Structure formats: structure tokens, C-alpha cells
Image (cartoon, rainbow, N blue to C red; front, side):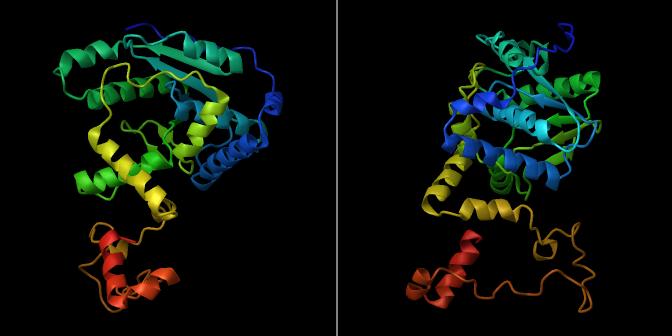
Length: 316
């Protein structure tokens, strides 16, 4: 194992003067992302006064955007918190080790680069042709937890966005038999850390546009040779199709993550169905078969029975 270096503290970069080189359209996008991050932080109490936030930066568009938004918000936040960018160099062949330190120096953020040869471990343990992602992520997670402890970080910030959360929801629903997504805030596996996902309200499309204009030095995510999880790829394609063909459907699903009605599911650990009586107070009554409002154009061509059947089938 390579010893951990001390946290590097570069000279702070000039403040947001560089914004003047961007178009108004881009600045509106920037504000939209920052508002989304700020709302997630406020809604879920992600960051408080005196917190040390370790931002995990992989070199992809999501983590670059997360770091950028947090740095911008810190400048005007009503609380004081410290940001340390952290990258794990897993010794994948072709990994450009100089890119992230140079970037962190250029923007003046504190950072820690950690070098651990997890690539060799994964290649030794996983047979050729099998997916390496599961073992790789477990090793990476353990190192992240360890580094957070060494830095005294009170929060670990990850770059998962709204689309990641929805993809995970459907992965668990279709392949795992669970209604479970990525939470915006949780306690780490080892119980020692609070993990936050400040991009929880931000879309991948907005993040991609932002990253392109910012010209972040993107590091490819396929250096290990592993292919994208086939099931996740299927889900991503499905959601992208819905977004094109049914405007508003993805937003509705995202809203549903925060509006769960346990009495209308079937998990006895969340709602006491066994002892349910006429006197039990529930959030809603039996409205499962009430007619659901649909756009007038659809209502004009579909009988009521068909409307009900369609809604029960596609889950709307």
C-alpha cells in the first residue's frame, strides 16, 4: 500500500470572475444546478456549520459538477464548512495520474490523492470475462471510508444524480424484488460516516451540458476494461425512452420517491396490516379504483374502463 500523502492546499483561484466568459444560457444552467444542490442540502440537512465534506472525485462529469456546485455554494452559504476533494488512483492501466492534481491546483481546492492498486486485486480474484464492478466498488468503498476517517471528514459527498437514483429504483424493482433506490443521505456500511448525494435533484442531461461547457478534464470510466452493467444499461435506455415519448413521466417518478404511502403497499414491517381495523387511521382511504384524471384528448377516445386498466398496468 502506498502511504497517504498530506492534504494539499493550493493557492485559491480567483473568485467567480471567470463567469463573464459564459453565455447567459449557460449561467442559467449553472444557477439551476446550484439551486438543485442547495435545495437537496436544505431538504435533507446534508451539511451543517463546521462540517468537513470529503468530495469523491473520479474524474467523471458528475463528480466534477458536484465539486463545482459545492465550491460555489460555500461562497454564499449561511454556514461555514470545509471541502476536501479526494481521488482514488486504483492503478488502472492508462490512468492519467497527473490530471486531477493539476485540476485541483488550478481551482484552489484542498485535495487528497490516494493510490491503492485495487486493479491488480480485482483482476486476480475475478475470472476473465466476468464483471469486476462489484468487487471493485467494495474495495473502493472501504478505502473511501478509511480516508474519510483519517481526514476527520464528517460528510462523504458522492456524485450520484437523480437519474442514477431512478435507475437504481427500477433495477431493484425488476431484478431484486425490492422497492429501493439510492437515498440522498444515509449512514455508511460501517456505521461511521454520513454519506450525502447533493446532486439528488439534478438531471444527467443538465450535468452533461454543464460539464461540456466547463471543459472539465474528463477521465474515461472504462480504463479497467469492464463493460457497463447490462441491466443498468437496459434501465437507462427505458427511462430515456420514457423521457422522449412521455414528457413529465420521469419527473413524476422522481416526485414519487418522496411521497410513499406505506398503507397502500404490502410491507407489513412498514404498516400493521394484521391489526388493521375500522378505527385505524391511515393516510388515504380505499381510492385505488377511483377514476384517474387523464388529458382530455385521451379521455375523448378511451372508455373509462380502458383508462383504469391502462393506469393499473403502467403504474401511473
